[in-house]
Length: 448
Image (spheres, helix red, strand yellow):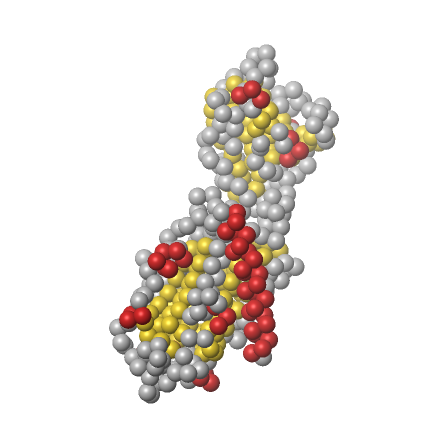
């Protein structure tokens, strides 16, 4: 069994190293809050370290120095030697080596393994933890205290929870450069802390990450893969997966039932996260099966494509047209929405709905054309038989069959479970130049 765990974990590590290399090359991982660089800069000196070795240590005759390490994490935590960091030397830490589970990492304590290879230090086991938040006993391997850090280790908990975290607001525990694998649940966060998960692989679990209540963890350069369900969001949980338009290097792929399952109440931004499929090529689902990318089963929505800047003209330098419905970022419950806006003039105009943001061409510095017209899924202009400037029903519009505006078909309902982008613009009187345009608005169509 242990050899099988090691094999699976090594496979996860191999994927993880590849993905971190890709993220480093692309430079798309923005920093937010705690970062691995910040932690490395504040690495403790040997005088502030207690050493533990499952293979060579001794809880009776050891003193916690590197030359005379303790044998168990359990004993080292109970020693109260006021050293902030416990460094685990390579080995397997489980009940057979003397550990008592769950291992509760106190506030501000750092437990770290091998900085070069998180496979070298394995913590495996579980015991009953009585949660003060959920008021239920749970089988857990490690419990992270307020501001505690777990670094460069592998944690497994067969038929149990590998890491449990239930700290309150303003708490910032950290999981760094680690592997969380081969457990019923990899990480469970159930309160309001800003747990930060950095450069960590979470795989081969039934559920990789489960977020409850008002949990608000930050994910940076993390790989969630090969679980049955990658991540589950419930209640008012509001994880942060991106920052300043970057996906922060996060990848959620190859989870057998679904990558993400959202039961929660909040809208979550996951723009820039890597999924199994191109973000513009799939829609959200309402059933977690068959390896679905994103499943939405609650009141909240997932923004996973592109979120435009609000109230910025699609055609730069033109007057701004105010559009009203569907409102910016709204969730709608029909595949045939109607559109309203405040026209500036009665000149020729165009209203489009696209499944990707428009690419604007600016020949000679005069923005005048949408280049990717193949992404237009519906359009309307005053030359069509029905509809009027400022108020258009979905049935008034048409679908382009080619790049020729006269080659059209009747409107086709939009697809459930995805975002669309819409904008309107107006020409001057002789139709030679665009003089007014709206901002790029977007809306999401509910999966139900």
